[in-house]
Length: 194
Image (cartoon, rainbow, N blue to C red):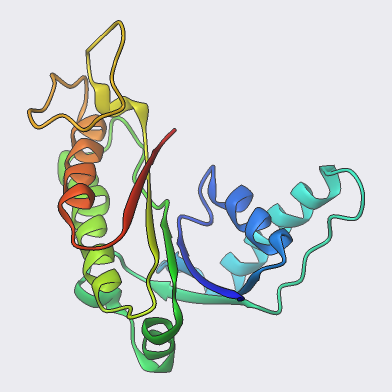
């Protein structure tokens, strides 16, 4: 059965690689690519993403070209309720998405605490709320980081800790907080730490 996937963070460091692999997989019918609203036109951001995918495709062995037929770019703001979605796209996504890959994050270690909290925690909360309204949802994959270990050293379990460790910066804290939200959510979720 062809899958319908929603991907955040497609323009980040990891996102183009994830999108490229999804497009190559052959079992994905549609990928809703949520792109952050900016002052640049959506078409400009899509063209940049297409170029990144072309570079990945050119570096692969064999015929690794991909089709963009099933890619549906959508301008959103994950820090806003309902992701600031509007129109038919949001309704269509709600009905068809079976997998959400949430890779969007503010990864700037020195960003203001509020900016980190808004994107990493509030954005994750909003994506989880969106996921709850997807009747076909089979998987919510949250892309996190080993930085949630904070200042701990030595052998670190892959389990979620109930008590937060000491953190070096707010990035680490907000990703830990987002993991806690995902773990407590009533959706089929998986946390992937890079």
